[in-house]
Image (tube, rainbow, N blue to C red):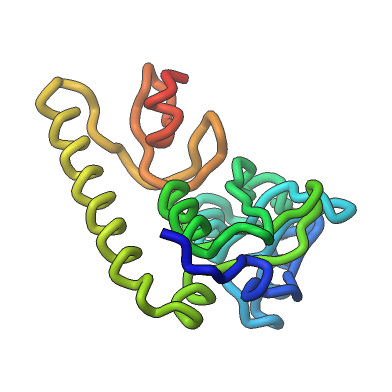
Length: 189
């Protein structure tokens, strides 16, 4: 179902970015100053990762001194991106597949913008029902998976945190003593 509105038409062009070697304190200050909950981690316009408020809060609960932790240490490295010429419906589907509410917009490997679920819904509110139903379906499938795992004698999800394989933050599963996300668990890492 194409909407006819391109990602490049509604994306935020002024992306707040940080360098991989910036401390989390400086990253948090940048987020606060620019009133954003996410910064893109770039090195010479090349996407290296994404850092969210949630990542910083997680680090704060696990580490005592944020001034020594760098963005590259906790940033999400496995990032789903989108091309500016794609339809916003495609972006919505990608967001849901990646379980995020944002996508860096890239062209030839360079970050040129950021698209959020809020951006899409401001322009095309009719997509709200699709976003809502897919979120509910994903939540139900995760509940069923945990229940299936428990019945099969496997460990259901253990906790939230950073996947030891890919670095994505989310629900973690114990796979042979290693805490991994859904995707890495399915891939058998």
